Image 1 (tube, rainbow over the protein chains, first blue to last red):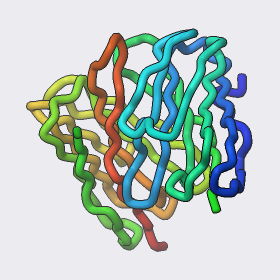
Image 2 (cartoon, rainbow over the protein chains, first blue to last red):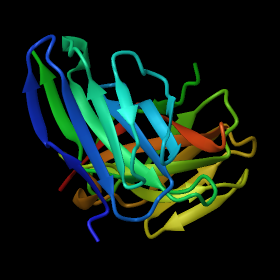
Image 3 (cartoon, one colour):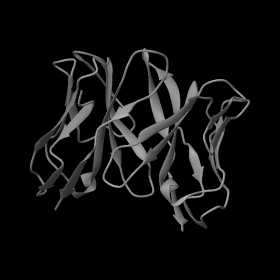
Length: 113
Length: 113
């Protein structure tokens, strides 16, 4: 039981390049979230999903797209990376019970030059 | 934009001292969670408080949810070097069949031996 895994762990991009971050969970959780964490700003919600095939925008969705084709996977895409997207990205999942615990992945550290 | 103000941002104390971290908001939350995050890892849940006025204890850590469910505090008694880390609060807000979470900016605690 690996919990929540994220790939890659580190990535450096040039401005304008694209990439996809993969999040996978093996806990059969319905809800999945993508956050970014920047110094002094806590975690901010980018997009979230309430189930397979559904996605919704969070607080800071601009410049990102997501897909949830399979229940266990939640993909975050950057179509044209910008230096402002340099951050640490965390994926989280949780079960459908109440407003309880989110389980977080280890994060992806992305640098955009 | 919902905000969750967390204070203090940084705290450096000697082993054995007590400390309190605060989270305050103008929003009413369905629940509030406290997480601890180690460098290079994702946040890990410490506790969830749900009921206004609720107090939960986890060994030397005491968590309290405000009566109006807008604020919370974390009190650590006799801090130890092992308590060093980033502490995050997160308030749950209902949205579109699930919950979204507003995170505080974090309190970076360092306990000196």
